[in-house]
Image (cartoon, rainbow, N blue to C red):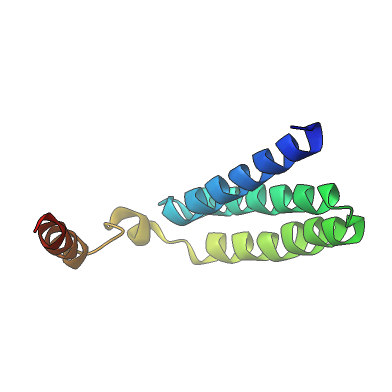
Length: 105
């Protein structure tokens, strides 16, 4: 396995992990930081593929402008009650129990 292949696998795994962490975090600011990590890893994948322009656009436009705009909006609306509530309702637990029972048969 060459260094480029290993780096690609690292960037791909880190991108998937960052995306999952961005979705599962309760704090919106922490979610935005994980999205920033995702954008930077995707830019790294573009660099490995030889698409320097796309990597620069990824960092400048997405990480530099859009993500900062999202972070600004999240900080402006201040969601303390959103963080205090459970992320998923009771129906998710009921559905999980039904699915678990359906697969045991």
